[in-house]
Length: 532
Ligand code: ATP
Ligand code: MN
Image (tube, rainbow, N blue to C red):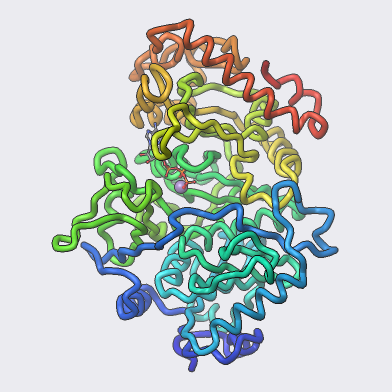
């Protein structure tokens, strides 16, 4: 049975999905909340948020993600980074998944990915869980009622957490699978309920399609000066580096918190909502994000709450450190309603350096920016795994290797061209440790990071004196009114400066070792910017 609103010529039946139970098409938020509650998929929280738990998987499963290896993508996919799946295995997986959903009820959301109509992709998300429907409806961009009537799904993503894949039959690694097929424009997701897989599948698709049109696809947040969309900034960074936190700045208009394109006209959000971390979320430092956790329809994922009072426990890590909330952009008061901005005047690269070596902000030449973009350095703090006492450095190219189907140089060259064409200023910002490494020092105060970023973005930092960093070659401001000057020189924040120097050498060695893989593919000026 068809329930809801859908283009009558594009029901699931017309896509070869038949024999299923009732299909709920494009339900709006309250209806999805009602369905989720009826099915006991979650609990209604304070203020009307939907509190959900994902079970076994509380984060992405990058090792279980596959790209179907067909002739048309054979020479364009970066196979060292994307596990291949044979077309026959995918066909079997699809047949078995469609067999599995026979008789089951499904939710369909027809949505746009891309605020710029010329570059957007029209995605149909088919989910087993009502709350996944609500999640992706928040995260992507919603067509009008009229547009829905003629909606043509270009891509179809089918997400069935109750389906277990079989490695012997389906060419996968475990019973969890995320399989992308660029020929069939289909993604199949099985045996994981982590909601982030939905949005990052869409991101991976766009990261493949856009570079072909000369559009740069970026794992970054974005904002612009209030009332001046032409005065835009982007913030690249791996998970936990501060994209979501820092893009929601009180003195700027939020464009988006995670995925953007940079076309010939400027930047555009792929999404229409945000997916923020909630662990230790402070109502003082991040009031707007905090407020969304008590708002009708927000999806709150894997947070522990009091059974009687429904009070959320922001410090509780018992289900996961990766607790999240998902909400539409209009839940943030100073968010853009177009999702568009001009060519970025500032390109910021965020890193969370748990070694405590990198300065809180540094100005980069375009070649240095390319070096840091290809390196994609951050560190995961120790503590969650037994026996790990050292910070865990990671290099994830383009600040998002798991979502990059093409070779890193493709994205690197596009970004470099655009930075040079537009004369954008480039910055490296360390939101990680200061005063020592993890264990000795402390995390950079959000207030200091915000003050330095504000000064960089409004131009006031241009007027101050800079020093050249002897280790990394970039320029670091010496002082800025309102910011503790000592903070600007990390070496000075360490009690034992010889220990700082040793730590800096260690970090440089890691950078150098990692960067070797890109040397055959890059220009001389970027080679010259290579440190060490
Ligand atoms: P993801 O890609 O997983 O969404 P993200 O880059 O959006 O990650 P955030 O959600 O912004 O990362 O997470 C940054 C976390 O670090 C937040 O919990 C924030 O409170 C905390 N934090 C602490 N100090 C700082 C700082 N100086 N700047 C930014 N964030 C900080
Ligand atoms: Mn984020």
